[in-house]
Length: 429
Ligand SMILES: CC(=O)N[C@H]1[C@@H](OP(=O)(O)OP(=O)(O)OC[C@H]2O[C@@H](n3ccc(=O)[nH]c3=O)[C@H](O)[C@@H]2O)O[C@H](CO)[C@@H](O)[C@@H]1O
Ligand SMILES: C=C(OP(=O)(O)O)C(=O)O
Image (cartoon, rainbow, N blue to C red; front, side):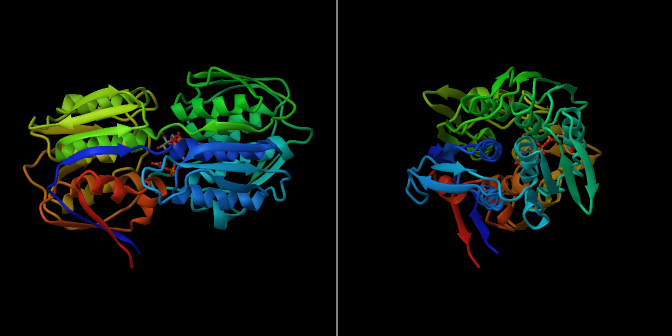
């Protein structure tokens, strides 16, 4: 299993190209199931989750072809991939494939809409909470689907097709909003989704679906209105920049000090996180095609944050911000409101000398003047990268084990940080 070795102490200076967003690319790829035409996606990141989803889609009959820049070229700006689901050859998504990744469950929406049936294994994904699927089930039932859960599978059918309806989510869910929006695009009549997730990835999916011929209004707000259409066509769409990758590197720069321009990204995708960084003492300014982040000499100040659905502080940046706060001059508080078990990085950060106490969903971080390198274990995707951020300032050597978590969501992390002066390498074994 690969490991990442970091020698802490170097400031980060230079430019980091931001990739297309994993959490936008995955639902966009799944949208290819909605049409027999070709959906071309640009700026697709090269990530383990993308490769896994290609396999899952292949099982349903989606062919893919890669064109444009290939991985390995320096400065690559992501791949262009053409997805074609000419015919759906299987409406079952099996446990072996779906258990590896939460988002793969989302195929249920397009399969049901196009084929009027789907049998999808209950999902896997990062172990950060129980992550039930009740909202998907309720939402799809509102569109007329009958659903049974049997032998670990969700079996859904809609004889005669889905019908538009008004549905209010009792709780905000990104995935369930994606699924309902895709399903409703091919339902008969109008669907109104209330209390929808407002994440930029939802708006990105809607933009792509509209390019495919869907009629969706209001995506990016909490009420989404969809007029169902008979069929969708192919389209070409560019995947949104990864706001979590952006925020992660911004936090790494705030941690080490230095001056880095994050390229191919947008500040409006993560205002709340950038505000927290400014409060912590970093200078953050939008520049043409990106964001410049620096901290030169200013002390790190403690900042309290509470995770929330967009436009709040993202849960996917919580671990990284906690790593930063371990070096603040004072005590900060981080409250996690989205997932009930997303503090697994706490004990690993403690190995590096961090002082963090937990009470339910609240972590209190007492800043320390130094961290010291140690072997640590990645437990989930964002937890892993929080350990990398801490390792960048820890004295001596930090080795992060179980790097496969990182590879799910960060493209060429060692190269991107190494090019800015970090001493970081991948140890393959
Ligand atoms: C691939 C992807 O885009 N993953 C993101 C997506 O995950 P994902 O779409 O899985 O997250 P959700 O927004 O659905 O989850 C939010 C909360 O709702 C709960 N819930 C969700 C569905 C359901 O049927 N019942 C239920 O109770 C979840 O357990 C969680 O507590 O949004 C999360 C919240 O921003 C991010 O952390 C993930 O990185
Ligand atoms: C939790 C995440 O991913 P997933 O929903 O795929 O587990 C994430 O991207 O941080």
